[in-house]
Image (cartoon, rainbow, N blue to C red):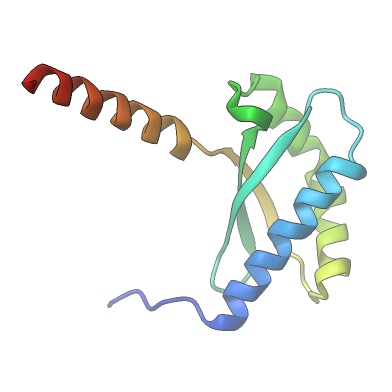
Length: 120
């Protein structure tokens, strides 16, 4: 069975959750383990039971391991606030993951640059 593209409503909810979480994490959450970060992507399950929140330490710095611990501790508060602010009857359970997309892109760019220099 082929996986269909998310509906416009689903995409809108994910985008609104991303904006809301970014605001909450920068203004409301005071846990010193979290520090400055960027919410790069939110991917919610089709039934909105769970949502994976991709984060990266601000400025592309290596994320400290305790950052995920702090985010997990704040997940209950964030879930409630996201549900209220986005207008969801049942807010999804939030799972935080470190987004390594930028790190992988930098490695690929370095490999390509090295290969091009090797040919010249």
